[in-house]
Length: 163
Image (cartoon, rainbow, N blue to C red; front, side):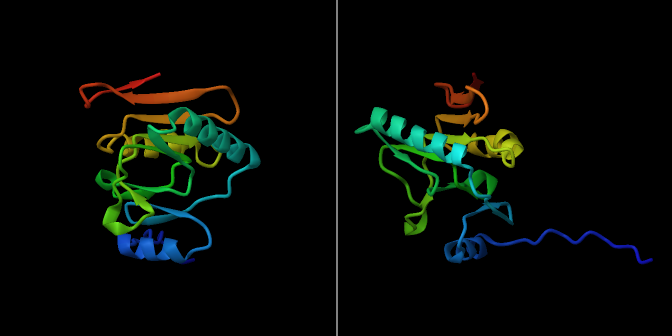
């Protein structure tokens, strides 16, 4: 019996990812060379996300733009591109390379937990999102309980507080 060695993960450049995602029928995120297909959201997930967009959009009208999950956010310091469930931008949006689908300056990012994304949202995306200059908060919303985990940047800009 031959010993099988694990195959290395394929490495994709950012340009390869952007071309792939642009032509794909479904959304994909990019994490340091890996292209990750996004799973289809459940009815409950979409209901919560829609309610957040409506409520926050109404509350922030004229102050900030509240965008649904089709807005791709670049996290330069983590070499990743993500599709948060809700993105809030205050002030003028900063777009990468004249590509209207690549936002650089979110003020608040919100992820609605799914069983398949729970660890990514709590660990990987948390670490990445907190590296975004100017990000003021990252919220993780549970589907299964009345629970929101909030990470808020403090006034000094270097410290985050969890509540």
